[in-house]
Amino acid sequence: MSHDLLAIPCAMISGERKTLGDFGAKAILVVNTASQCGFTPQYEGLESLWKRYADKGLVVLGFPCNQFGKQEPGDEKAISSFCELNFGVSFPLFRKVEVNGDAAHPLYVHLKREAPGLLGTQRIKWNFTKFLISGDGRQVTRYAPTTKPQALSAAIEALLDS
Image 1: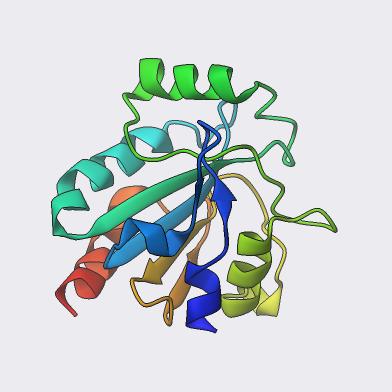
Image 2: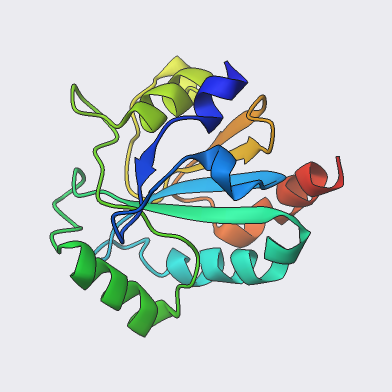
């Protein structure tokens, strides 16, 4: 099961294909993002986590999604420019994905099954839902959009120290 999660191919915003396993991280933070959302300022906190823990083995991965209120309408170039210019984002971004429904990206199908939400629901509720994954893919924890990135520091440190 963990091997499957780490081997799912994903298209980076540049078009290059990578798997979570390609990053060789001790901890992986996967977030569905949007540029026109009330939670968009969380990009700043995600970038802060990336800068603080990247050398210790964390990778932050942003997956733009337009399924919630059409809050990510831009193409890949517009998304990349927005993130870099407004929030200095340097962590890896991927091509736009769907996280719910029949067209949900296989990564999100797997993550939702491994870490269901409140009352066992698998659906992603909104932008900036976060999944913290151990480097071996065996431990997956879901965090709500309202959970600020800095609130994940202790959980990230626990994975990095294990």
